[in-house]
Amino acid sequence: MKTLKDLFLDELADIYDAERRLVKALPKMAKTATCNELKKVFQTHLASTAGHVKSVEQVFKCFGGTARGKTCEATKGLLEEGDELAVNFQGSPAINAALISVAQKVEHYEMASYGCLREWAAALGNPKAAELLQGILDEESASNEAFTKLARAKSNQEALGVAEKPRTGKRPVRPVMSPRRLVRAPTHVGPSARILL
Ligand SMILES: [Fe+2]
Image (cartoon, rainbow, N blue to C red; front, side):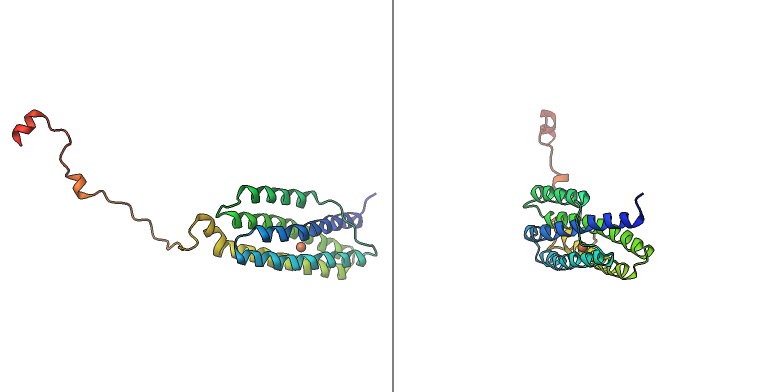
């Protein structure tokens, strides 16, 4: 019968594969981004992701095993969708908002996984593993927050095409019909009218 430890090691193998896929995908995402701040966030995230790979290897060791990966179909699928978005939005002012959405979907998957893994490590009586997993979870949350901040401060406005002109909150002024146009004489004046004129 499968145990909680089997479930834990299976999910750890899943997230190990997810992290390694991200190490490969993030440089491409940084290259595709057209915003320098976003490139920087992706590069910082790449460094922390490489650290997560090492930390997950440590967690495997805490359970007396060596690291193994199992294809993470979720991350694979999210990254494939990301490639599709990058192609569809190439040259669009919405490209950076699109890339942030891809990164955040992956982040949320990781956050959910690490939350479960931390709980299971604690339940299995391995506080060292639980602490390592909490450390990764904290960094994932910080990365997610960095993406949200950048989207709000820049990328979403940029996607609207108004990055250089921040919205003031004022309602746009409606064009007023010219008074001259309102009193303009009829274009067709019949014979009787002509007499009167
Ligand atoms: Fe990660």
